Length: 225
Image (tube, rainbow, N blue to C red; front, side, top):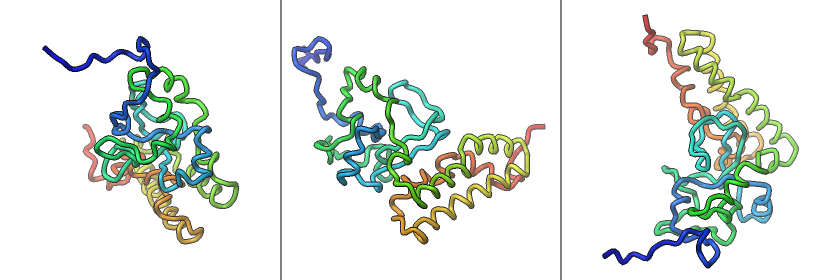
């Protein structure tokens, strides 16, 4: 006979739903930040080096809706640990290095009753504009975003795949511009390199993998007859 204790669904339990700290959600990736998380940044509990910006048009996994696709908006989230998907602050055996100062989504989520998280998931999400002070750095980040708009570049990739040489050169120019900006911000404005995933998002070839193929020499494409 199985003597594993039966799990009582949160809605039927006599005690309030509480995180079991199993680490399942942490291993799926860090949370997006919301307006309620700004005090964590202002107090230094979270730093810009802990964050990554996922830009509009970038492929994302929506764990609440259960789908994968281009993000309709920009969002800022805790970055993954190096070489994996798990949240930067996840520790194994399951533990959170900032449990006493965790972001809103972490505090809200209870795996067996995700309705509370679903209700706030897309509301009041932070963007870089909410975090960066007005000035040259914020302006350069906005300029980079406009020049490397992922929705526009996705169309460029499709045109390059169809044999458009001008589109292929546009893809190369976008990659060069992205690389130049990642050198410019540390060199001219003293931006710490480890904060570039927040300031500029992921490198362009990672944010839009099709761009690497679009920039390749035309001979690498095998066109259909």
